[in-house]
Image (cartoon, rainbow, N blue to C red):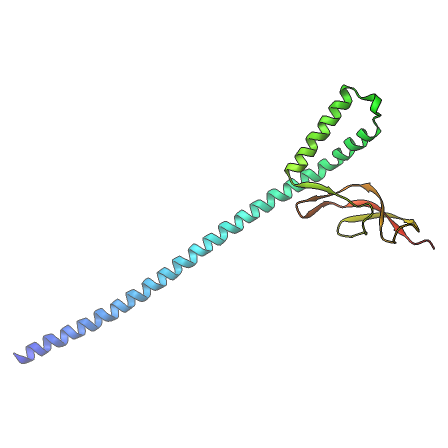
Length: 170
């Protein structure tokens, strides 16, 4: 009888050990599944952020290209407005001014601004030098004339200003 009790106790201890081992295995598998789930969730979040960032960049680049193409029309409107004499104001002139103002609103809405160049020191990141002009009244490298305005879109150069730069007399 004692042997039967011992035998049952041994079986019970063996079963308990097997259960403990199985519990440890299941806990390990659970930890691995949790870790895998966390990694996949983080990966999905990263993909979502990357996709959103790429979408924003794509839209920005598309806007940048479109606005760059419109700048030539804005330049034409500005040139037209500068040659109109004050006594020649008529409906056509007012129409041109209205179109120009609408273009200006579009630029403003898209954070596009012209930047000043005349009197500034030439900067290859902002300016394209078309020619040099011999001048002794300003420092060499100073921009003396602007042939075409430069524009910034946010903090990026949309179009370099085309300028004439002073040089020392020889």
